[in-house]
Figure 1: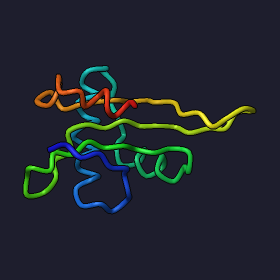
Figure 2: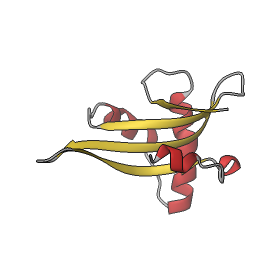
Figure 3: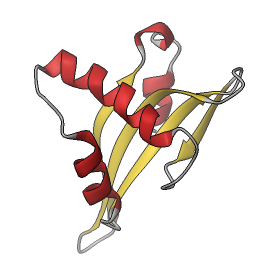
Amino acid sequence: MIKYQWYVSGVLGAERGVDVLLSQLSAQSGHTVARHVNLSRATHNHRFHLLFACDTEHHEPKFVGMASIFFQQNLARTIAEIHDVVVDPLYRGQGIGKELSM
């Protein structure tokens, strides 16, 4: 079963999940990511949020997808920009990326 949850610092396995997923994203784009420094910096920005997809069939939830989202206010409304959507290759084709983006 796939469960969706917002990132909270200190959640068991969250940093490891970010590492694994970002390394897959980096491998695809050819970029190197300074993961821990960027994660710490980003999570201190109140406009930045991470949404995870977790496979809860395991003893400890397995992080199988992630999207980073920036919220901002313009003159008319609050808007969200979706960045860095990544889904583990073993879980692709199940609509997880689409769910993370909605």
